[in-house]
Image (tube, rainbow, N blue to C red; front, side, top):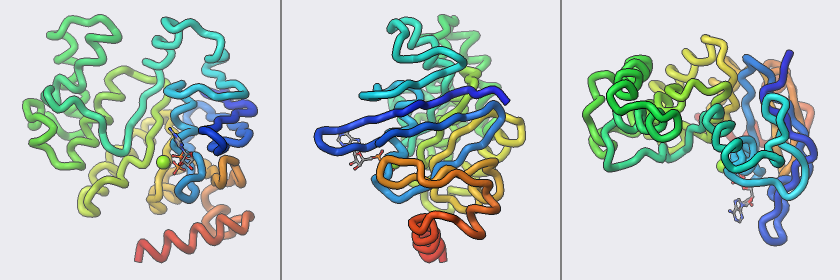
Length: 248
Ligand SMILES: Nc1ncnc2c1ncn2[C@@H]1O[C@H](COP(=O)(O)OP(=O)(O)O)[C@@H](O)[C@H]1O
Ligand SMILES: [Mg+2]
C-alpha cells in the first residue's frame, strides 16, 4: 500500500530535551493509525512535525513522495492544505460563525469567493450534523459542537489525511460520544487518519494499527487486538492499566 506520510529518523529537541528521538513511521493510505502513550511521550510533537507546523532538527518528513524539508514556503503551504489538523482545543476563530469558520480556509487558501465557499461549508456542517448551528459563534456552541465544526473545517479542504491531536480530551464526558461518532463515520469512509487519543474504545474498535510511544520513541507498533490483549512493551502494559483504571 502507498504511504501518505513517512517519517525517517526524525529528531526534535527543545533546549536540552529530546522530544522526538529518532522516529520512523509510515502512514498508509486508508489506515486509521492511533497513537497512544503517556503524557510527554512526544505525540503532539510528532503530529505537528507531520504537517510541518514545526520542523525536525534531523530526519525527513515525506508526503506523497516529496521531502517536505526541501520545499519552498509556497509549496509547503499547498502541501499543508492537503493535511487536515484537528486540535484538542478546537482553535476556531471566535469572531466568525460556525459556517465562516469552515468557509474561511476555502477563501484564504483555495481562493474561492465567499458565497461558493459558504455553500460548500454548509455541506460539511451537514456532514457533522450541525447545519442548524451554522450561524452560531463558537461561544454559542458546546465543546462537542465546536469540535465537530473543527472537523468540518478540516474536511472542507478535502485533505488526503487528517491528524487528530486528542480531539476529545478537552470535552465534558457527555460530549465525547458525538465527536467519536463523527470520527467513526470518517473512518468508515476509508479516509486516512492519524489519531492521538486516550479513548480506548476508539483505539480498539476503529484503529487499524496502534503505535505506542514513550520518551520520544515508537516503542511498539501492533494490530489493535494484539496490543490490547498482550502488549509486548512493559511500559505499554503499565500505560494500559493506568488508563483502564481512570476509565472506571
Ligand atoms: N514548544 C515546546 N517547547 C519546549 N518543550 C516542548 C515544546 N513542545 C513540547 N515540549 C516538550 O516535549 C516533550 C513532548 O511533548 P509533547 O509532544 O507535547 O508530548 P505528548 O503530546 O505526548 O504529551 C514534553 O516533555 C514537552 O514538555
Ligand atoms: Mg499532546
